[in-house]
Amino acid sequence: MSDYNIDKINTSDLGMSAPTPKKPKYWVAFFAGLGVSIIVAIVLAVLGIWLEAEYAMILIIGAALVAGTIHNFVPENSMPGAIIGAILCPITYILYQIIMAMFGYSYESDNTVWWMLGGSVILGAYMGYNKESND
Image (cartoon, rainbow, N blue to C red):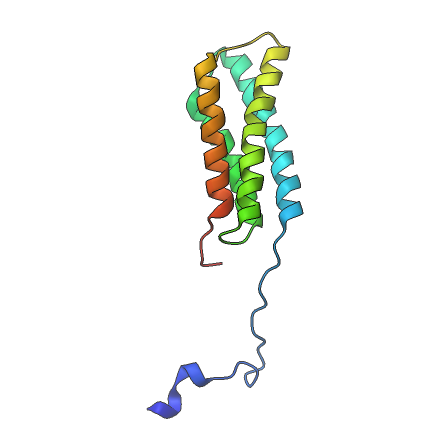
């Protein structure tokens, strides 16, 4: 049975090449995340103005969309990915607040703004750093 040990098979003998590791795409992650961040901020502001209310769950989903975009472009356990996520997720929320203020809307109290900013930093950093290992 030891003649048929699968671990000893050389992939070059079978005409296959060994998988090459993917290069990190930090710039792509940053600019894709920035684009999604701007789009999500606009959509969140439109929803907030249209519904004349602000829902925390919608804001969390928006931050998760931005973090998920970054998550797709960075490798597993990536500190630069965590930094990109920790920067772009709060930028989404800040842009949302700026757009709302431009149209005269303000739903958040001072305390909630800081909680949402802190939560978006944590969510962005977590999703930017972690990735499934089955890629």
